[in-house]
Length: 490
Ligand code: NAD
Image 1: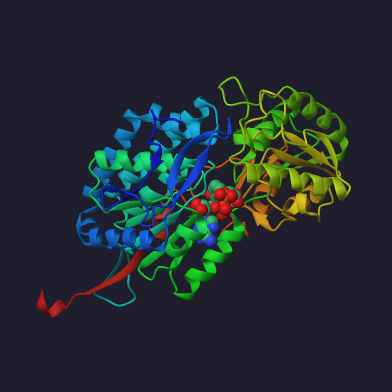
Image 2: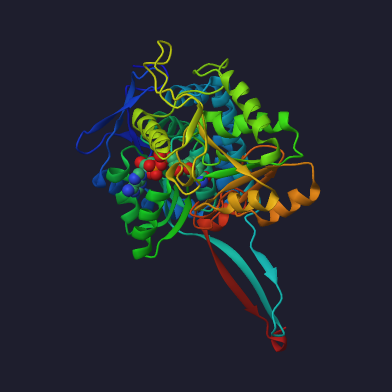
């Protein structure tokens, strides 16, 4: 067990204090890099969730009654405290995910940038003033918080996922209950510790550890939770939308992707190879924005495939800064990936490189998936249509631009997309016509910057956008105010 960065038993934060589960339940959190036990998390159930929601309700009046500038000052203090402790945050992220320390520090920097951006919104939080059709009538909108926000996150980028939800929810004046991802409980726990040390009043942010069905589902169903913001799989997102929809709670869903990257015959092929590798394999492919469908013009397909295989062979897999990608988050996910590839093989696809768990002595104990490239997969089969969320990508041939665009759009998902071309006409047409929330030219299937809205179309979400100022629309209600002036009374 790792006892220097976090406790052996990672507790909940409720009303500013650490609490165990009412029934004493615990779950194991294993290191993806070694397969060994890192810590245990509290197995919260409905009773614990109810306590967390009650704590958030109790804190709501005082927190929502502060000015946004005052709230922003506290959130900025948390951001500064995160910066002062960035190395520790990154060490915990690296321990829980197996990602390289430098990558974990980069993610931590992104989380802090998000915190700073949202803290600054305390001095903006704009409504608008506008005209009225009626003389002597003045029209404006102001923002009001919703109440208690229920925040549920995935483990893939654990501190960024916390920051993307907590800071916009709190700056708007909501109090919150965060259901941490069960694979990264210590990251969320440590964030709670830093937030309270920096001056966040008790109860404003409550953090419950636990499994999805046990701790996430009761949060979604709780009648006093006004908004649910969820980052995770499309299957769970659909369940959440159904449950929350029955009680008409507001819902924001940031879901999966099957993101296309098109390489045209006029592309800079070296640059395209570099970005395909990053898009497909960085963070071991555990990015909603991962490039999992590489659509290559026929004219350069063979040349590009060879370049890609050559560079993929050079990738180093492991948990250090010398490695290109680390393990995947847990053994169940790893087994699902292997099963998807086996199914693809059975359906006629060829595995060009990789294709299974890494079982050599250096990798055998951890949850390491070999970077995998597949070709000849039927576009209608599972490997082409379903998110695998690992270092696995498929190559497809396109005869021309129209075919490539049509293949890019032939997906139930629509999160990110990318094109490599030097032709302004192609890139303009692609960025306009591709069905995605993010379209990129000559780089990777990457989003997002703290001040830019991120989210997808089709089954990648329900239309909401995080982060950017657009995230404020999730966590606030608009109120129209009309002020009518009586000229006779002036
Ligand atoms: P998941 O849906 O299995 O779990 C995500 C979270 O939901 C976890 O905290 C889990 O405990 C909780 N959960 C599970 N079942 C629940 C239920 N019935 N009710 C309430 N909560 C429940 O997803 P995962 O496999 O952990 O994460 C990977 C997924 O997240 C991928 O699909 C990926 O694309 C997606 N993701 C999306 C974005 C985005 O911004 N669009 C970002 C990161 C990850």
